[in-house]
Length: 138
Image 1 (cartoon, one colour):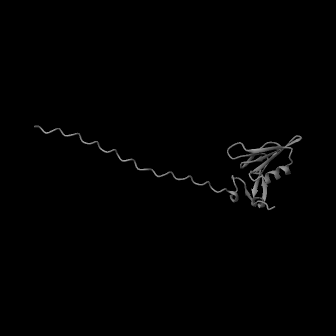
Image 2 (cartoon, one colour; image 1 turned 135 degrees about the vertical axis):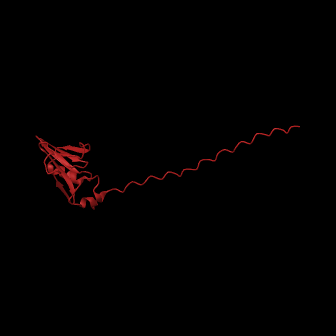
Image 3 (cartoon, one colour; image 1 turned 30 degrees about the vertical axis):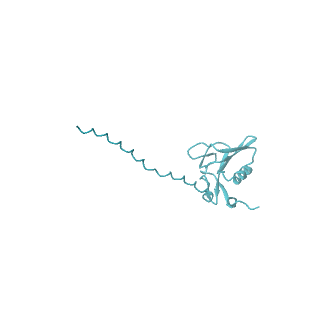
């Protein structure tokens, strides 16, 4: 079975700001992610690589447990949390920091139809007839 074109891109991984820690997102806390327990680091990486909309993964070993966060929004830096590691996906050497890599960008939505032309205002009503003239004096 042929592979989709995006899977043929070379994926590699980088630490977003060169520092170990949990993944941080531009301007806010992460709101969109998948959390899985009991994955290995390699399993977590593989899951992110196979998911087109995964921008990065965060792996943590917490005692006997391990946690895998698949980051479904751009990741640009880390914040220090002991035992956590963040790895951002790169496509052919370009960081996946946008909603869609350039080669996957969807077509822009169609433009809405133009409103119908405005009709001219209706003509004014006809003028009332003039009042009858008084009869001539006799």
